[in-house]
Length: 177
Image (cartoon, rainbow, N blue to C red; front, side):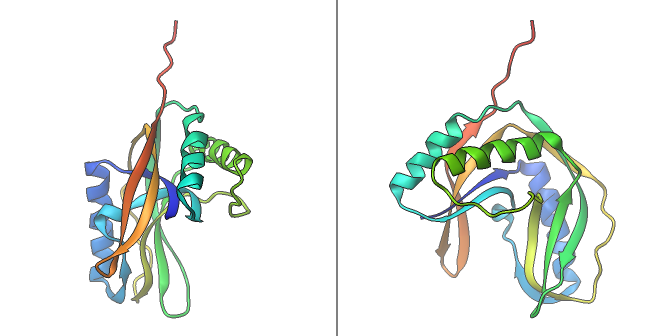
């Protein structure tokens, strides 16, 4: 199984992301654009593993504690590349998101995973190998409340990637007395 842990989006956010992806596609001569159902925010890329490692990952996720929190999607960007650019959507700084990702990374490394080194740069990929004369344009910020993280399986089916949630972990609401 090829796995990663992500935040998936609700309908309104997904629709706005899809609209931005479609604007990019209409301004491009070509590229590999993310499928609507695959738009997500990666927290940790795990790679190939068997069922035992997937079970260890589910256990590591189950001890993560977080409150629901808001994210704001606020800008488009791109990374230049040979054969086309990677286009992404960036988020406003969010200490809660970074803390969640750090807590998750620590638990995963304690469970034996080797993760990418360096700081976490949250982004949503719109397209890879995009050929366009367009430059990133200003977008109206939008967002949603995050209350669930998902263990996702990536499979190549019918010539495309399909991402499927195989385990979810939900934020715990703490009552204030």
